[in-house]
Image 1 (spheres, rainbow, N blue to C red):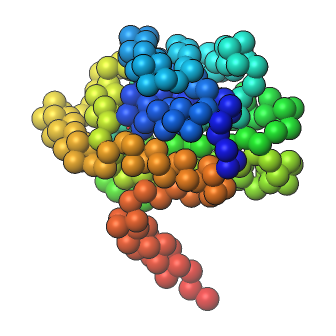
Image 2 (image 1 turned 90 degrees about the vertical axis):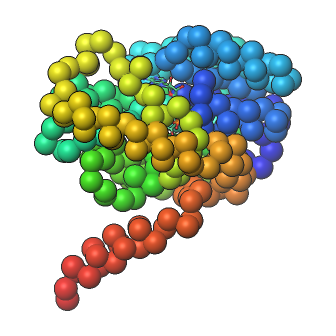
Image 3 (image 1 turned 90 degrees about the horizontal axis):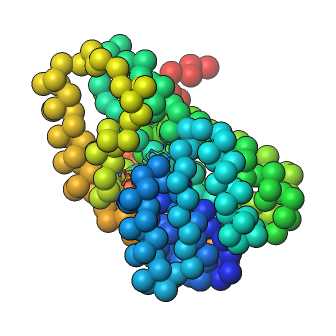
Length: 275
Ligand SMILES: NC(=O)c1ccc[n+]([C@@H]2O[C@H](COP(=O)([O-])OP(=O)(O)OC[C@H]3O[C@@H](n4cnc5c(N)ncnc54)[C@H](O)[C@@H]3O)[C@@H](O)[C@H]2O)c1
């Protein structure tokens, strides 16, 4: 997709951080924007900001972990603009802790948002894109955590590794099916967003008793905060995503300086394959 003018872009988790930056960037290219988010107030503020900048924007409250909510997002998009060209499955949350101490509620929450959210987006939007038959693009937000395995991050990494392979597979399938729907998987390292405050959006029914000590939880939370606030500005990531859409690139790797860690992992796997 070279030209976004008049295209319709849907961004989940679009009220904050990377999602909002992508919405702003696409709007500057002339796209019509639908931002979807679980937080009504943040969503309303984000729509006003986009409109003040001259965008044609709509906000839809959506919980990506629920299939019917994502179906309603497609319906609202079609009701507002009649079509969809870009879908960014971007909404995400993070939890941290030793693998054996993660609670069922933490697992269910993170799998629901970070993985089922992407699955729902693909299952609901791809049939419509195929039916339209015009140029479309799907961007799935993974992370460098989708390429690495570091301690305390297994639940997050499980979801992000899954999003990488889902995207790689989908890209090949859609190339064979139509050749008109591109796929990109965004794998940033640290970005200045509100990700370290994700806990505020955990549904009550998934708030269970943590098995991690309060001390450890505080240490983990403050280190995630430090890493995120010291990260790259979100608009830099949005520029890279726009470039990937326009150039049809599968991998969006915004932190090349950290790719040595991925090489270390790949080398260890290759070294284990003894002939
Ligand atoms: N910030 C980083 O350092 C970083 C690095 C790599 C990957 N990511 C990924 O980027 C994506 C965007 O996160 P961010 O960093 O911009 O954080 P953010 O918290 O600023 O934005 C995430 C948005 O998702 C929304 N959200 C949460 N649960 C939702 C749900 N169930 N349904 C719909 N919306 C929901 C939140 O309300 C929020 O507006 C996530 O998938 C995250 O894992 C972030």
